[in-house]
Amino acid sequence: MAESGELIHAKLRPPLEVALAKAVKGMPRISSMPGQMLFEPKVDGYRVVIFSEEERTSLWSRQGKDLTRYFPELQETARDMIPPGCVVDGEAVVWSEGRLNFEALQRRLSAGREGLLSMVQELPASFIGFDVLAVAGRDARNLPLSDRRALLEELGKLWSPPLSVCPQTSDRELASEWFEDVKGAGFEGVMVKSSIQPYLGGKRIWLKSKHISELDVVCAAVIGPVEQPTEIVAGLPIGGELRIVGRSSSLNSSDRRSLAGWLRPAVGAHPWPSSVRGTALDRFNRDASPVQLTLVEPVVVEVGADAAWSGKSFRHSLRFRRVRPELDPASVEVPARLQQ
Image 1 (cartoon, rainbow, N blue to C red):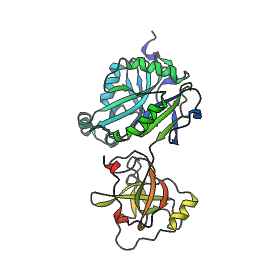
Image 2: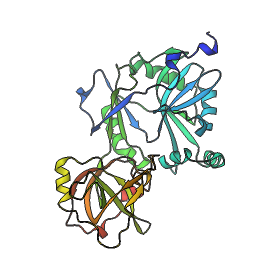
Image 3: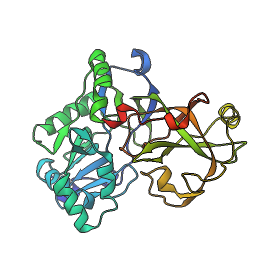
Image 4: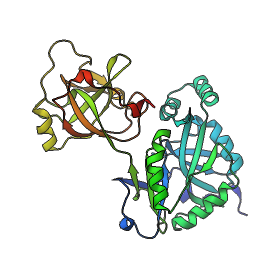
């Protein structure tokens, strides 16, 4: 066997670009991908690549950030259960009351040493592996997914919680059941992959079919002028007040015109300030730079949203559907599915 310093060659050392996925609506057609289609539950966590070496086991984010210190329990377990020379791709997650708790993951990145240790004790993290990039120092990325999956399952025989292998199936009917059944646990949908594809870092080689549902929110501010709004700032009644719960993706020209026709500049007292920190619009964006809001008289709009809800805000951008002028903003409630 090679010396420990040779187990992972330079081209396999962190940070590495990870394979990405393109969002699609609903379950893809059988002809959507080459080879056999393989399905996995889409986990709502932090994308993490684990590098196991003789001298150190480390965890790296999709953006190439070293996350090791934020997940000491996973580092320790991975050091014991993943042989040196292996690189494993997956998701770090936190389970809380039977559901995935993304907000608990987010808090780790801003916690001090004592706070982090407390979180590790109270809400320990788990790792769900779904791909292997190297085994025994050998680059596996050029292998088809079916072969990489076999290597991953072989590694998984050595694992026990908090490490696990992500479920996978070629059964489209079972995948459809996953798509419908996992919403209650905080999953986001289903990943779709090709059995014959190699692992191409930085490329959108997979498909992600996410739960998209319509709901009514209160638009009490926009980004941009009233006559040409570029984004909606969405609110829902939480804790007795209208809280900002997210923002929409950029509006196209048709949607801008449709929305602008119903917008009126705010008059009198307003539940929101005219300037907020970026984290108020997107609590999972670490950029806290001020964002100017154009305050408007509240109006109800229907938006499309996926299942990624923290309990206080949406993780991903909302999609504008239409204005609901016939509805009273005071009648809008937090949907039951978000209160589970």
